[in-house]
Image (cartoon, rainbow, N blue to C red; front, side, top):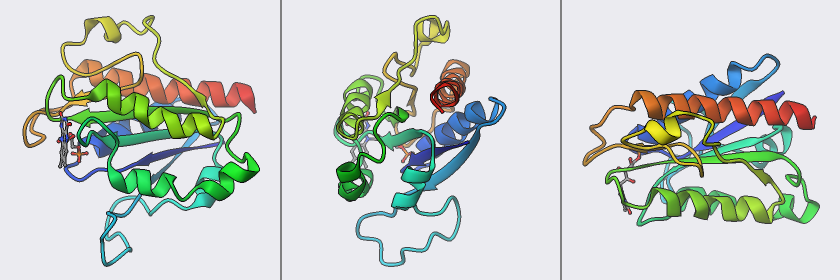
Length: 190
Ligand SMILES: Cc1cc2nc3c(=O)[nH]c(=O)nc-3n(C[C@H](O)[C@H](O)[C@H](O)COP(=O)(O)O)c2cc1C
């Protein structure tokens, strides 16, 4: 069973989170993470030289669930990811993603710079697709203990100005927990 980890990252913070979410997915026996990204909107060369391939509609359709990651851009998801999602109408028409589990994660440079608004805004198109959006329960101890990122709406990372802050132990644990949760729910829904 493949779970799609689809993210956009310029500075590397969201990419690190995506790798941790993937680690959580792969800790569940029978689950495999499929990492994908999207091009910058005005990028001339659409072929990535490094990192995961660009996401195609088939990836969304073939995978049993989705973890969607974006840096915060003015309190919202990044335009390249929104641009990709805006191209998924064919799947929406057929209800191809309806009933599949999904979760979201983000990174910001400032502590109160819009993590929760970004996470909630990322949920909206997934709800329109009929996906079953998962958060993180407070039974996950790091949600209460964190002094940086980590929310009940999904994992987050406080990266600091210039993305210089490392992913903390609590943020790391919550990324992995979210990946595990996505994979465990997807297996139950199979
Ligand atoms: C155009 C633009 C808008 C941004 N808006 C916000 C914001 O609203 N709040 C915030 O805390 N950080 C904001 N940032 C900073 C990024 O969200 C932050 O550096 C993030 O960790 C980058 O993730 P990445 O390293 O995966 O690209 C913005 C950055 C850019 C370039």
